[in-house]
Image (cartoon, rainbow, N blue to C red; front, side):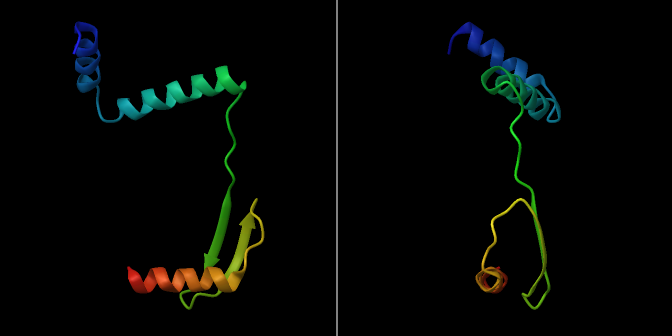
Length: 81
């Protein structure tokens, strides 16, 4: 490892656990502003499922899904976990 790399490693090791992801987030933001001229948007979705597996409510920017398939997947995940 070169002297500059060692210096970089020492710098990041000296940073707090809170500062490291904050710096990474800042780098990510700067990259998106440079590359895409703005922040990417995320699709938001909420599905409320009762304990018996029935879907109560679905909100957000998602394509309609087969509620029975969702319930089956949830039931399998509950039984496996």
